Length: 306
Length: 332
Image (cartoon, rainbow over the protein chains, first blue to last red):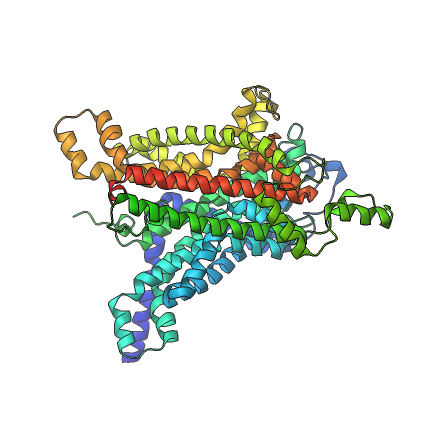
């Protein structure tokens, strides 16, 4: 009975935990709207393409450059169509999957590689740590878009290479942050205590240091998501990112560039989608930064008026 | 897109120099020697990376000569341009040329690559200069006023707008700008450099993101400065609020602002690539994109070298400014 009780209390605990987070999200209205928008985009990215398998590539010559808000061609054409008569709504949804997937994988890859090198550089220190840091500085001393442009022209612009380049060019940011965190946490008392008790390096890193560095890194990753998405869109826009028949929002904007005078909607909608998603991700990251900061957190925890 | 650091920890990133006590000249000398050595290593690393990456893109002959060119012509062509020698020999040749400031000739028209780059560079520099000046001015004024009453109506509106400005992709902004001002109202030209009107759209596209980021930094930095006791004292003495904001607080809030402004200025080249491509502006960004598409090695290398050099000079300048403004560094 004791056991069931404690299990129940743990469950309650995690339930209230989730509720607390939801409440804190609700209190920041901008972040809440951002979270809702992002959820919708993710939902469409996951479910959409399987519901409309071919609509994104289907050419309907009757509906070439169909204007938006015109239901003559059916619901699929509510946002209009491009010069080949492809439904913009369907392309937006399929593009959401590519755009989200590329950004998410690039952030994850950069986060993982950056964390590994950051921990090595911070924990081991010395000559190795310095060399790692200097290499990161070389990458960072050069504008990321230029670096990506040059590398992408060497490697063929496939989806995997775009992810690789984006991860590589943003990796130093994680590395530096992680290193700074590790350097700071390494000197705390509980780590010293663990060391005194003979904990192995693996145990120290994975049990004591990494869990404490993680909140900062997660906040950074959310913030980076928008930046990486914008970088990918810029690359695709310049024609050096993902290539057709793959669809990303940046590519769609580029497609419509030639038709601005006659069919503004072709590049307007995907650009709007990029902007809204980036803004939502930034709002959410801003909120997360407040939540993770103990000095700021009270702003989002309901203060009872006495 | 080089938001290298959080605005919040900006000064930490720049101010992590070890301050010794041997006096100012010694410290500054040591400091700049260190910075120069590090930057030179970075620069050299870039030279190597760019050279070998560019050679991996494929043989430029395939692009320049027609498919049915006889082999003898191909051989003659590659011998003339040195493509038949081993990579390492080409690299050695490239390095020794580099020392003599000879960056090779463009494959497109045979003109020296450096000439192309030097012709394009001032355009981008001017573009970035105006964009940076505009965003700094607007950011400082807006951020300072917003910080005067945090949470007030002006602050909320300014925060929201600066947030949007920092998040909207520049290429979309460019497209919407063309749509509204060139297609709908026909008041601004879409491409070229002839008149001052040609500069309006590119500069506006370039200035939005740095302005958004900088406004946020100015705001948070000013809030801290306005809460400090010296500003409270000044206010208590009845000093005019304009003097308090721009005279007392802003001077002390300047350091993080300069750090972020430096990063943003270095990142201008990212935006310039987009703006120059969309508006057909003959700057370094457009030159670089064109050269990449044309596999014009010499021009790519020269453009990258000069950009890196410019960023290097910019960083040194920021450090100098930092040393001038911060007495802790100056008298360290």
